[in-house]
Image (cartoon, rainbow, N blue to C red):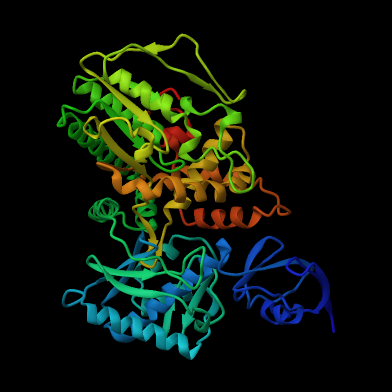
Length: 554
């Protein structure tokens, strides 16, 4: 019987395994030990389900829930588990929509219900999901010719998927089945429902919250919290996208095919500019305000938002003065270190807080104040004779990741501050049950920007991204509800614009690199979008910060 040479990274052992053996069978053979159940594996740096059959020499690394790939598999499988509960308990006309992340879970709604969603119905759905888990039903992945898959989707009332796959030029499509429930998902599933031992389902706002295991402790789920400002921004932008007829990727692709993309771009950009104008007017309505503090995660478009807010404040008669928190870093040798002994540039204590607060206080008092410029090469502040003094109409516009952290400006009176949180909350979804993670939107922006303007390859950016995300969770997101206003910089068409740039960059990641798995995932994700040439993008657009051609200087 033919054998295949395999190296298991988990055990650092070589094996010759039978040709066609599944990863699940090999997992038992090589006795991989771990605190938690293995959910899938990287095979030559490609994500595979445990049902994958080994057919060539490979380096294999099994992963559990604590891997990004394991979490994605687990969450996807919960989506189908919830779909089955809705399918089993409710009429076909009722459509489950999985909308976006919030409070450690996914916010979902049920369209076409005959009466408002009740606590009792949510509990019935949760109980149905629990019973399906106890029965340990396998998730079946079936390869079909795309026309047959479309027929299957149509017969199950999944018209949103029908439109998406009519636009793709793939011969075959993967269809997932869980008994009598059919759906499509962007990636692999865990082997069976018995793996889904930790989850929750609760009534939340006008819908439900599908609760997920913690990324740090699988057996625990985050306490449900209300995020009224963040939730409101999500709802406003989702509602606007739906009103404009661009809720799903297939809607945007159709407008591209119909040569209506320029009109869509202009309307989307005008909607965003209207929001920026309304925020500037809210600032003007508070005459005591002397500083605008703008925070947000990586690649959210903080810098361009800062400049556009400044323009609109200028329209209202203000004299905006831009100040960067980054110029107030401590000297390199004074910077705090993390648990690994590395400089922690992401923590608020890396800022020279006494100097920053003294500078702001003296400016508010009307004094002329010298400003430093931080030299990132030498790791020191430089004093080059730059100084400013505010006049009666001056207003400081300050950008930095810690701007919503009270500790940054603790010596400045609250009534002179106006706080803005900027993020890229993706308004469209792939389809009803496949939301687009906001982090993917920002990651693609960063890959393009880093390659074009910072000399970083996609491999460099992908390698740094987990550390960036950890810093955001610790230093940025806990303070987002402190904002007076939130601005969503995501544009419904932007992934079509980023696609040709990102495709070229991501294809440079070699198959031998550990980042290849993530590069491959992003390339597949982008394959759902039709490309949009950048020549229709206005010069003041947020997107110009990433693809170039902006009218602003950075």
